[in-house]
Length: 119
Image 1 (cartoon, rainbow, N blue to C red):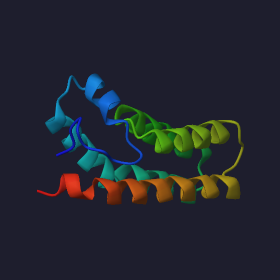
Image 2 (cartoon, helix red, strand yellow):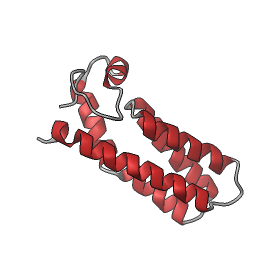
Image 3 (cartoon, helix red, strand yellow):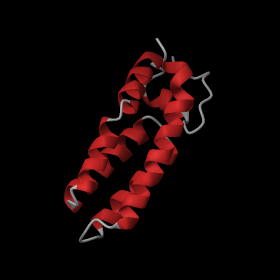
Image 4 (cartoon, helix red, strand yellow):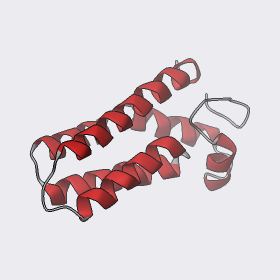
């Protein structure tokens, strides 16, 4: 279980615990859902469809979830991606480069959380 005593690179767990009123069970459930990959897959699909608006919405969703979980590195990259998409007329290679950065951080976070999320 992810609680205030867990030390996971990429997470500010004490910050998340404050937001969730120290509910470690809720935090663990939310983290499992986030790490299941639905939001990342939605972001990939939106970018691959080359739809700027849908891609910006997907990046915004990823940013918000990462912020709620205090996954700061993912939040920062998703924010940069969202802002870049909102300022663009088309999805381009720099957006896919940012997606790669999000994926790298996501994979790293999943590996770091694994010992705390096993049933």
